[in-house]
Image (tube, rainbow, N blue to C red; front, top):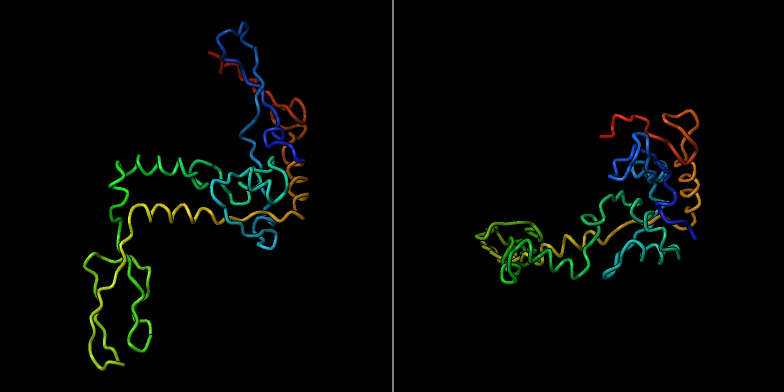
Length: 222
């Protein structure tokens, strides 16, 4: 089983600003969250390394990682494979959070079911030829006039579909459900890269060890 993501991060010591600090050169040791993992570019840009995955129900990244790699600790890899940074905005909401979001955005259940916009229906002539494609955003008074060769006359069609706020928002969530995951056989490559990337290099600024650097500007203390 892989380690949890934060266990890979090296540490950083910075001048303590805690109220109980007694000396100006007291330090606090924390994880360096600015040293972010990344999938190597030649892997990230090659689709053959990835496979499509559809998020079901209220699945979280750790659930997906457990399904694909039998290891929930690789949730961070699921995020990296899609270049996701913010779980709250880039991952589909669970059902309760989605309902809360709708009420917060639209103010009431009634407004959730109001029309957001109109879309065209697929319009065909009497010979089944497509005259106008479906799924296009149109005005509420949309209409199209065309000559139907099968009927040998001009025809007017006003077919359109009402898209509610609920449907619009659900579509956005559904789009987020289609993600990519790294194929399991390439997992070792990424983990090896991570272990190479995270340690500090000897001679680097404020180097203490492979897993620790220290901020030595005591003017930060106030």
